[in-house]
Image 1 (cartoon, rainbow, N blue to C red):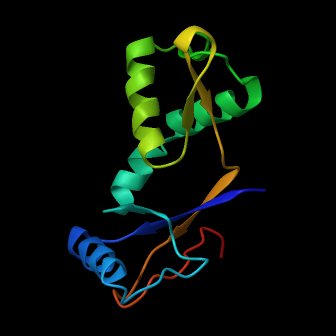
Image 2 (image 1 turned 135 degrees about the vertical axis):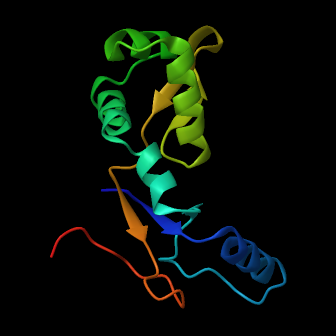
Length: 130
């Protein structure tokens, strides 16, 4: 099972972290998030129920093009393309060239793990289960 580690941090926190990495003052640990969102709301919007169903459809059906996926999903190709490009920027979907230049969507992860700091001092894993 492949898991994408996601973190939530404000813009200033992400900028400070990036600069610290660039200066050699911080080396990301193995378990640190690779993908960051500025808010839980933006994360939730991207992984809405509708979009999670889309990811499940891609993983299950393995469409050979965006046109094929649009037909199976019952969504317009232009809307689907925008959604997938956004998901691609966050690593949730890979869009690779297929036959005759068609983009082939693929879901590279089985699950995501969200790390959220509750105190603002460090990132810690938050789970939905008790």
